[in-house]
Image (cartoon, rainbow, N blue to C red; front, top):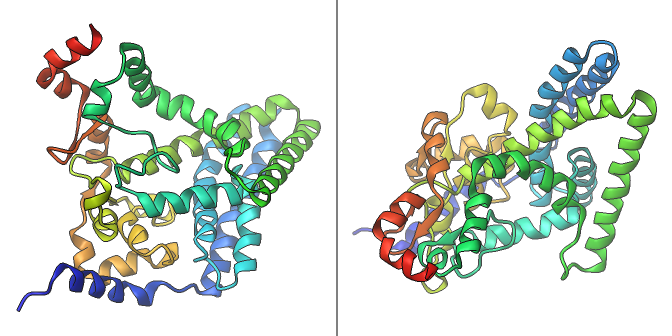
Length: 343
């Protein structure tokens, strides 16, 4: 007798549950092999920035990988999965948030909302990359469609996106933010500003722009790319609220980004995103083990670096076909409707 969907869901969560535990020793080792090298690389970069800019720039590029890995620690802390203690998670989360320029409380709330609504077409907007359905796009005016096209353009999303993320989006609170969240954002902003000003006073603004600017820009672009590819692939899962299912959204709506071991280490196993969305309390260092130990998780959509590049083409979601489509596909199929809207 085959199991019902409810029974399969219950078993899947039960099979993953043993991995939803933190190990203090492993967490501390991760801090040591991530944050210490980051600070050393930055130190070398600033030491050479004014005498040999090429070394300074190289260190900035190298440091970007460690900033991405530091962000994964920050990310785990927001889920309360990096340490058993809430205080320890909050402390390390705030420190890594300052190092990566992310306000801990603000991002934590927005990211938890993202987890609770991922793949739900009726609850988009917080913690997500903006995405329209075909009908929503066709209903827009010509200027608004142009604005959306620009937003989804890879040069804008991955070129201007990191600047907007670090300099604007992370610096301001949402209108509905509570006092504690607002104060945490202000605190992060002040600490980041103090660090930058101190570096400028010690090495000059050119050195800061060369080393820190390079690091944060590349890390920001990589972070946006990872977030993009984890939910944007042809047959990703999206449903309207009445049909939306949390487990399906996790396993079918989050990709397994299969990366070379070096990149897997730098990105803190976040390529196992389907596991993470199913069980957010699994720390990054147990995601791979969970994936390998639970056969149903191995059926998640697997994407490689080569195949992931194809996802840049996907701009709109078609709920009827249940897949992402390109602008060209929409214009070809709905040419008459596009013209009527523009008229």
